[in-house]
Image (cartoon, rainbow, N blue to C red; front, side):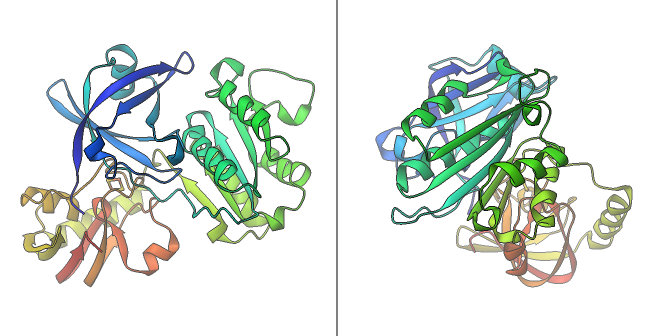
Length: 357
Ligand code: FES
């Protein structure tokens, strides 16, 4: 699908901690359908700063049933957009917002009796709290266990909202805080969610880890890697592990060199690109398929351009492409022929990609 940005008014900026803010948007009646979302999804925000277009993805912290569109932004050192939000954005301003997307979610079913477990670190709580809210309210027979890592109690986003959820859903929501710079009585909770802590948390705080229906992981890279490895080493099936990355690691020198060689070989090849029901021939004129399509005037969607968000996802319907980073796709999507076009280079003539598939 082509990108669909809509100008939305900021209804409110809610300070969550010293470093984090939630932005609540006003959604006019006629856009309510377009902005329906699933728990765990995110929005791409677009604005112009210093004469340049800036796009960022932020996860929704609300549940679909709340009927409120709200994302949470954590300020990062040197972060152009996050600091602008913290210092300048105010209620009444307008931002371009892309309709919700993302696959860090699951199908909720009111008759289900499931056990969900989340590992969240820092602002990685944002999509996870959306999932917690939804699981507990939509599935009265289900429960959620959350392991949440932070520096200290002042930096815990949604501290009160999580405590309130615990009170409202007694016995169905278990919450464990892990603090790296603050010491409490229980040794296990002092420190980061590293591999050892993840192992112990699974072993001692989950009654039947093998019975957990879905695991959700979102936070800093090392935390996500630790939690994922802890689960895989216990034999948890990959399809039960959902991971949401906000940033990508640097590609290895070998991969960067391999992609550069492929780009050189692919320069000038013709591809066929389908977007919003129209198919056009496009020359491979840039570093990847996404940029080539955009250079040809097609509004192919993107946000991170780092292989993380999957906004640029398309299906290869003919020929072969090579992809560098692929964090934003599941194994099933890759097997079904989906690629991240911001990371993809055609191999040979006759490649066709379809953004509508
Ligand atoms: S634009 Fe984010 S994965 Fe391609």
